[in-house]
Image (cartoon, rainbow, N blue to C red; front, side, top):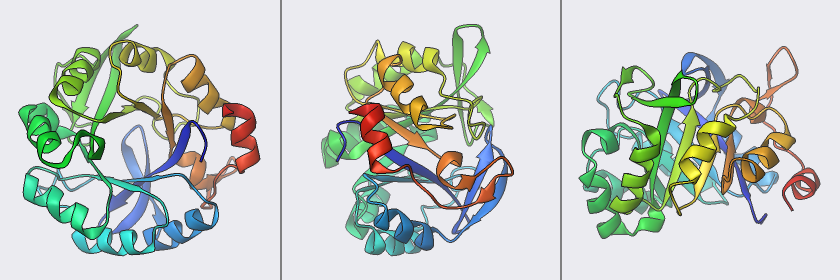
Length: 253
C-alpha cells in the first residue's frame, strides 16, 4: 500500500453507479459490482461509495447493495448516504463495510458524530464535507447533495468535527466535482491547517500529478477520484480504470 492512499469515490443512485459534474446531471456508469471486481484486480487501496439520493429522498442506506459490495471487495470500503442513526451504522458494519461517512446529518446534529465515535470508534467514522466557493478564498458548506446552503464555514466546521471525534474528513469541492481540472488546493490547505486528522481531498482529479499537488501543496493525507477512474478520453467514454502502481509511486513515493 502507498504511504498516501488514493481511492475511487463512486456514486450510487438506485443501486447503479453514476457520475456527476458539480453535483448535477448524474450520468449512468454501470453496475457497482462489476466496478468492484475491476478495482480488485487493480489492487486499489480503498473504495468510497456515496449514495447521492438517500438523504434527499429520505431513504435508508441501500443495505442489499452494500452487502453485495462488501462480499466482493478485497479492500476496505467506506459508505455514505442516508446515515442518521446508530442502528444503521451498526447494520452497515455488520455487512462488512469498514467506515461510515456522515454528511448532511453531521451538520444537522453535530453531536451525532460524538455518539457514533464513542460507540464504534473514531477510526470508523468519517465526516464528508461538501463545500462551494462563495467569494475569493471563502467557502460555504452545502448539504443534501449540494442543494442546501448552510451558511457554515468548512474550516471551523472541520475543526469541530475533529473535536466531536471524527476519524477523518472527506473534503469535496463542489465547484471541481467531475471537471478533472485539479483539486481546489486553497480549500484543502485551509482545512488541513486546522485539523490533525486525515483529510481526503476529493473533487477535480484529472491526472496523477493532481494527487501530488493535493498532498504536497494542500496537506491532504489521501486523495479520492471520481471521473478520472470511470471515464477515458476527452469524450468521457465509460471505462473503469485506475492509475498504474508505478505511476502513483513515482508521484507520491
